[in-house]
Image 1: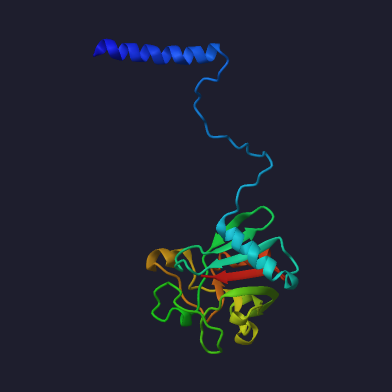
Image 2: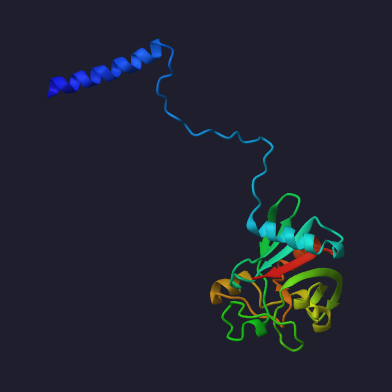
Length: 211
């Protein structure tokens, strides 16, 4: 049996050898073709940046400055730094900050947005694209008006939905209570962050809130 197996192996080797000598191609292993990567190829942008760019494109006719977008991710708990300043050209997040949601969006004070509303007296947050307006001094100090650009937030000016500072938003409160306080629908920031946020946003830029 061993002798017959050796004869069979020898015959196979001789056949392959004769094919090579006679000019016939020998059996070859097929390897997957490698596709070259262009040195100019750009990496895919983070999903959050992609959504900010899409919102900017959709509302471009209203937005004077397209270099930076304020992006609020209301799918995160209020203890998280869920407001992001996004550099559109660079495709990256410049900074992230704590921001409140409305008490009407979270009646149980759980720290999570449960619903949105555009109704007067709802005290709820509204989603969608806002245009940053003029700054002014009110009961919360220096504040900034917001203009709603969609049906979901069209009453922002009438409701007094603005950017302002509040003592109930702070890193200490987020750490100790697992959430920050609630506003009446405004985007409230900590006293520590408000100046930097307002300075970078300025007037005529997009603020986009989503969940």
